[in-house]
Amino acid sequence: MKYRKFGSLDWNVSEVGLGCWQIGADWGNVTEDSAQEILKSSYENGVNFFDTADVYGMGRSEKFVGEFLKSVSERIYVATKAGRQINPHVAKGYYDKDLMESYVNQSLSNLNVETIDLLQMHCPPTEVYSSDNTFEMLDYLVSKGKIQNYGFSVQTVDEALECIKRPNTKSIQVIFNIFRQKPAEKLFKIAKEKKVAIIVRVPLASGLLTGKFNKDSSFAPDDHRNYNINGDAFDVGETFSGVNFNKALEAVDELKNILPEGITLSQLSLKWILMHDAVSIVIPGAKNKDHVGLNTSSSELDTISSLMNEINSVYTKYFFDDVHHRW
Image 1 (cartoon, rainbow, N blue to C red):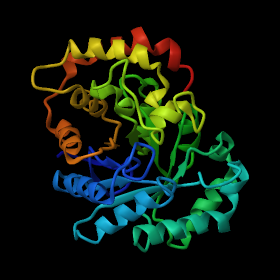
Image 2: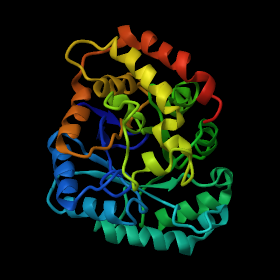
Image 3: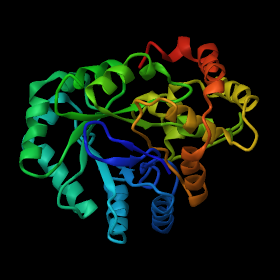
């Protein structure tokens, strides 16, 4: 495993981390034993950064992470998120210090820690990113020792550019993959200049970039790849990166044709992300330890610089017109 500096902080994080949405909810059933096996396997493969959220199984994911932390002595960085419990989900909820502190207190209890390494606002309404009230609330939580650092999980590049104007923003979490390339256009350069860490989520486009799906693939009723295919529950960009499923299958076939021998499509897709030096860490999820092994091994692959233009052309051909302007 290779490690990278996390923005302006003195953290050296594994360039492949673990996204913990899958062990909480919305990806079909994952048992507690399976969740602990995934966390342990990640740790044994050099992962030292777990990304979770209070709403992943309404505390289930955080509790699994907290339980695992008891078993290790080495430093593991934990990032969680808050805000999606606000109901109705409106901006003013993010400005309520008492409300947000109550969410953080619950996360501290779930994770069994005294302070949160990194708290991320969880894809809030757009006006939250530019409001002084947001940063007053976050700085208040830092001053009380509840959190050490804060960042933002965003939907759009414009939202990211807005919140990195603030000096205490330590990280941006954004969707970035072969099918969603807009962040590389201008966000990455500015984030690197400002020493803001970039956390990449949905790196495999909800599994499309594993190359394992076909036109007959189906998903469980409690899997967001079933119930959110049209964005009925949350932003459609979180499910298959917002791209058309059948068109994506065609793109996957083209990518398979350029795969180097001995490399899977998921490994290639993760390595493509890691070829961008502004990226601090990529956080694929996993449903078993074999997935973990494949994901983490992408860190050790040789450079794929000779394939970058060909890979990027697949995005231009299939998805640029559909998604580039949206997020």
